[in-house]
Image 1 (cartoon, rainbow, N blue to C red):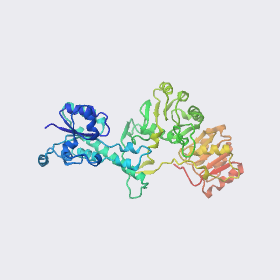
Image 2: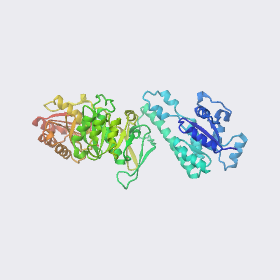
Image 3: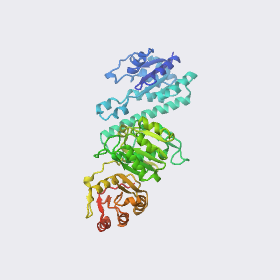
Image 4: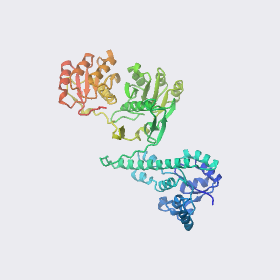
Length: 521
């Protein structure tokens, strides 16, 4: 009896060459639905599943392969005499190769207008059952779940045997495939039903490996990048440069989160209008942030904010990169640039910097990314919502005698958007839509303020200052006034900030508090 291969795939990539290879190796083909039609259209001999089982497809195609002649043929152990006897008694032919990839559930739910019914209809039932059955019986059945596996399988077939190591690897990938599929379904359902994780709930996390990294944070640490398919940074297309490193990816994430405060790809941020903006990051902290009249103008201002720190930095731009932008990007050494698009002229100019990594990331990929932020701890994971809530100036309160001017208020809004992306204790100094000084990660707030103000230098005169935590003493306010700061913003909401408010009144500074919201991280 000729060996049998069952093919039922949603993704038809590589299907015909695979089927041709199976036929050349002496296999007969069984298939259903659109897969059978594709094979027949290619002129290949194929038996439809309904003909093989003797049972028609029913319920509009919902039931095709859920039949003993399919699952008996897959699950039967060739070394078990009783299994062979059962096959003989029922007239069931063994199935030796199963080629299945599942209904495109993830692609379906990625559409912003997808309905509940459309999503549910794209939950595959028969496919996962066949994949799991074949993977369980991998000693006798080879299971393929991705077109990327076809070439290696055909090479093994041409060599005359599918060895146990390859069978086990294919089984592992099959179980991973169905696990990721089930996770995508349960995660989507949970989101739709707005169910919050409680103490008894479990976190199901299944992300395919996108890239094996050269090393982790340090050269002696191994690392792998796992990414949500079609979403977030993992959906970006790298246009040139060396492979992204572990630290590159962390910095790209930080830069992208910061620049999105001003919109991305022409889309507004929260209730605020889109503004061309650029961000330079070093070690996950922004060192230069600016808005401008265009991508090129914003980029020039972001680099000018601190060109010393920008050297070797990672850049995020929220609009298209053109020739003018490329000119600024080639003016100093940079590691990576992420943007919605790079035009042909910009790519030509940037190709002179062969090691500069360019990542093109569409706004839609950001929209599809998970709203959950995870951080590993010893023996577990912490999960929280992404901190990207829009700035609500209507909730702000002026607590000083002097209110901020309209120009100061605009600068305070810019500074406040920036400070939440700086490592605490965080202080930012800005004016006219440009950061002038950033103090990050110090153990006391006045230390961070001193760094930010000294970095700003003479430009601090007439600028504003933001803090990610309230001022418990008046020292930071007095230091700011010494450098010419005219207005400050803090979370506030504590009786312990009375000294700092009094200092503002004494020195003529305006102070705004935003309520009890802290950005400590």
